[in-house]
Image (cartoon, rainbow, N blue to C red):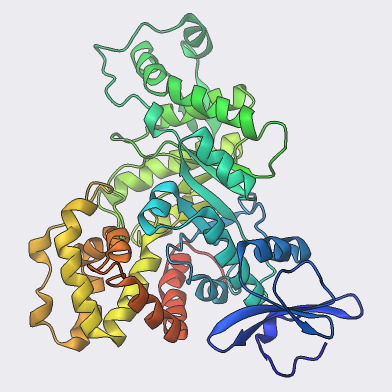
Length: 470
């Protein structure tokens, strides 16, 4: 194929058969798919069998069928997988440059419905942004797409219908956090027969046993959630119609998941025929958004050791949610799981994007920061944080060169972290976006700066988890 006249991304060039080819090229300020001898793409016919196709959802679907490496695959079955929640649709090139060199598999597309609503995006957009980035960079290692923290039949079906390779089922609406010793209903006989008066040796020196009081509460807390997970599995995944991995999330709760609770939920799901790749318990301490772990490190190490034994016993991986920047516990996570885990990050990628803004356009960052302060109370409805706004320095007292250092301060990080949706959707009186268009223009111009920031920051996560470079 003749590439002259096109500013082709070299890594995207794929020859198909003897005379057909497809690649990504920059034409003016936009990227297009250039195809020769492939009629399925919809776009402008250039003659000589060439088509210049825009980056639409329709053309992304063609690309995923033509080049399977541009479609998501099931990576949770790999020893180490890592979720990368890119809320902006621009982080994947940087993530690719990182994961090309680490022995872990990325989940490039990972968004919750809450995040979609706050950023006015769709799962089509999330998936397509990754497809085009993977195509551009020629990344053929394999990557996943996670319909994250989904709670309804409608949302699960939406993600699966598009080809998402992983569903994280959020069971929180069905977990009874208000159960106490005094209000727990009587224990059903079948559970008593199954669990009471028995010791469960799960290996590695860990033996679990239930008292009647403990079991009664556990059944009351998790019974409905287990039924929900069984129903969703049977609806969508049991018959193999959708090729996707299943993650069970029981972490969005008030109280810590005890080893007995973890064991009970896992065993009941498995006994009901549910096949799942990962489970996310609620660990002790605080896994708040965008900052390091808050809590007793020795207690965490003690508890994750037992949680990891339970996961190994039942042959699935532990999943660590809100994993962004939990640097102090990463070494123990890597050690106790024996390097077999799934870790999710999201907001930290957005924070690195905003750190770039603070560095290259201080005036714009000051505007965004001041708006975030005014929007904080509204944003706090969606996230649990302990941010103290009084501890954040007044940006008017800081020199331009000092602004990026705000992202080393927990309260400032959480301020920007949880206000992302309001920042991106804020409009002027004339209907134009107050910040969104300016921010995307800046990020496009500074793509390499952002990629370098992600390589450094997410790379620190992987290093502390003990992931080897390969």
